[in-house]
Picture 1: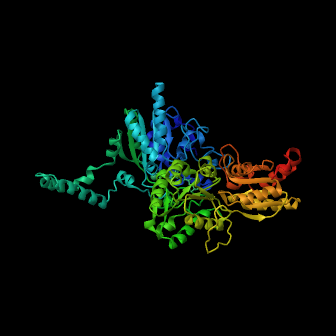
Picture 2 (picture 1 turned 60 degrees about the vertical axis):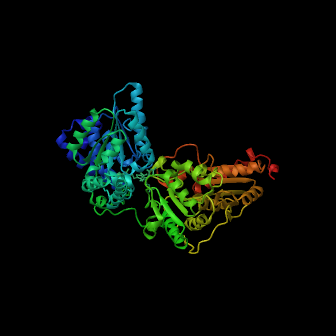
Picture 3 (picture 1 turned 180 degrees about the vertical axis):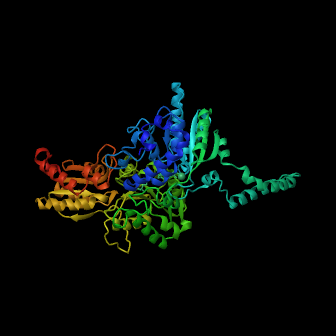
Length: 637
Ligand SMILES: Cc1ncc(C[n+]2csc(CCOP(=O)(O)OP(=O)(O)O)c2C)c(N)n1
Ligand SMILES: CC(=O)[C@@H](O)[C@H](O)COP(=O)(O)O
Ligand SMILES: [Mg+2]
């Protein structure tokens, strides 16, 4: 039996469906999402929440002439399904499949690539301005969640949009959730969760002010007391947006299709910038996700009937989990340690810390820039802030790392989770630039552990260090190796030799170290004696160890899960050049000058030639080519 969804391959098909059948279409889409995402994994809860909203937008606007910019873009599944990608939807987030985020290269209906949050109003405003400059009349709609509204760039955009006064529709999709419950004064205000304490403070301030007005102060105070009860009703979320120069419509029930259609048809005709505030339920229609939206924000494959994951046996503990446990262990001994996350308490492993030390834990919202400068302020006052941010999201705060931390040599610890390739999220989320973007900052110490046990010692080292220091570690499970209970500081700038050999030195960092060791074993079977060094520090390098290895072998392979440009291998090359050791042959393995696509981490590592097999093959090939291109080894000091 053919379904409504079967009849839709583009938004024009959707518009042929009578309005009264749209709720039935919404249910079909929900069932399709649930069935597919339970097999592929993905951002389920956010998508279940915007089914009606996405249908209504496509019904009332004309994509691709009208532009939709989906903030973060993790909620664009219904949009994808309605714009001709239903048949490929089972490939979303898979190797060589369609992306889990909007992508201009994937469809003309994806007006702007997203993945990192809070960009939609800026991009939408740019598009609206381009329309004005061109003399066009198309509409631009930015769809932004309440969590993403906590990002400063969203306010920068609102500020300019209110000033420019051009047509721009901002849909605030308010489900009162970020990945975890949303935080901050703005979100409370918009959701009208105006707390008693907020009013108590306001009351104290107003009373103080009024009492001091000569003669009439007491009368006004009486009046104000009577008015107090109506104050809560008087303050509306709309006031904030109206003050910024926007018209405000809302709050709208985001699962009521007739109401949504009516509102968007009106909004379409309005002049100037408008915010349409839509209330939705994250996880709508699937009980386990409605009950626990955080657990279903991003999921692996799961069983629809039970909501339980179907990913096989639980593996070794994750780097993230071990980081969180170790930080809590350290915090028990050092009361100066505080932890900061930018809207990722679960993702960065800080939930346990937050429970144990609620006073010393700060979720600042999706505000990485603020997180870093907030940490700098704490450090300036003698605290040891540990700022746990995904590698890719710290890119947002480069200037804060430079200006607010490094320039003042403040002891802020950067715990960079998701360093290296992350898997299914793809190019927006791979954390493959951090070694490059942190290495050149004066005063920064930069480490990457070879395994989860070393991570623990590095964290101890980091909180004991008197200056900016970063440790980056990968997404996913560790090796399951035993963990030392006693934590020790690793002397700054010291690596370790894991295997001896004279033919070649493989100098590896982080997640590539144990594969390098495995590669050495493979090479040994072929008669090649490879030395293996765990560099541990990207900065400062273990100068003596590396120079000794260079002198001994004259031939170096560097391995890193980072961009080759400016990364760890570049640092080794710089050292050799600075020491005049230009005769040493060096081959760098890492990520070439291109963006890495989505796919399982082992697959991506194999493609990039930085797994054990890739390192062994590259080393063998490099040595085989030695005769042909080797510069004179006599140049080696
Ligand atoms: C700069 C940045 N920081 C953090 C994230 C991780 N992240 C993705 S979605 C999300 C929550 C977004 O909440 P909201 O916008 O309300 O959307 P919802 O998931 O509730 O639909 C977060 C923190 C990100 N994508 N970008
Ligand atoms: C969309 C987004 O940015 C996050 O939801 C991200 O996908 C989380 O990644 P992890 O699964 O690695 O925590
Ligand atoms: Mg939300």
